Amino acid sequence: MAFQVLDFLRQKSLIQADFEYDVSYLNDGFWNDNYHVSGGDIDWVVKYYRQGQLTSLFPILPDQESLALTCLKGAGIAPEPVAYFPGEHAVLIYEYWPGEHWRDEVEPVAHILRRLHRHPVSKPEGFRSLSTDPEDLLAQGDDLLSHSEQDTLARALTELRPSPVRVPEISTRSLLHTDVGAGNIIEGPKGIRLIDWQCPGMGDPVQDIWAFQSISFQMLFDRQPLSVEQKDLFIKAYGDSDVDRRLKTLSRYFSYRMAAYCCKRSWDLRSDDPDLSRHYKGAANAEKVQLERELRG
Image (cartoon, rainbow, N blue to C red; front, side, top):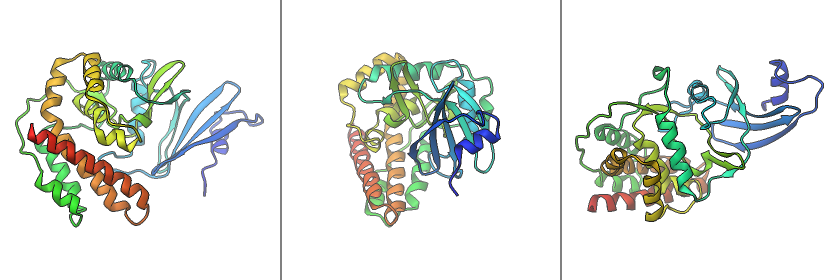
C-alpha cells in the first residue's frame, strides 16, 4: 500500500485537517520515497523509508540521518529538521530547500564541506565510526568483490589490489556525509545545501573529499569527471594541506573499494535493471582505470 503522506501528517497533527496542500513526488529511490508538501506556512520534504538497509557501503540509517540534521540545525549545511518518527518504516520531515542539483562550481562545495568537517558534534557516539585505514578499506573491497567473483571485472580488480601502507590515525574525527555526489548537493537562490544524510558517520574528512572528486561518483550522478584544474581549485578552496596529503596517500584504496562496490551493484542488478547495471559497470570500469593510474604513480 502506498504511503499516504497527507493522512500521515494529519494523523500526527502537523498540518490542518481542512486545508488543501500541494503534494509532489520528488523521486523514487531504492529504499525511500520523498514528497514535497507545501501550502500555507508549510514547505517540507517528507521522507518515507520503505525499508532499512545495513549491509551496503552506503547503508540506510534513518535514526542517524535524523541525528545529523539535528546536529547541523542552524549551521547552513543541511536542511532544517522538522520532525522524525522512527520505526520499521521511519518518516523524516525537513524544510524544503529550493534549487537545482549541483552542476560544476567546485568552490562552494569545498567551502560547505570545510564547514561541515569543522562543525562540533555533541554526541559523536550516535554515529557509526568510519575507518580510513588502508587494511580496512581493502578488506571492505575484498568483501564486495567476493559477491561478484564470477564477473570478469571483479577478477581484474582483485589482481589490481594495492598493497597497504601504514597511515597515522587522525587526532580528531569529523562528521561526514559519505555520499557527496551531485544529486545530493542542492544549489539555489539561498545558497547551497547537502541533502540525503542517510549514511553519515564520524571519520576522516578525506572520505568526503575523495567521494566528491572521484570519477565514479560523478558518473553515477550523470556528470563529467572533474578536470585536474577543478580538483586543484577544490583543494585550494578547502584549505587544509594535511587533508590533501592524506588524500594523495589514500586515494588508491578508496578507488579499489568504490570500484568493488560498483562492480557488486552491477552484478546484483544485471537481471532486474540491466540499464542501471550497465551504468554501475561503466563507473566501475572508470574507477578501475583511475586505480591503474594511481598504481603507476
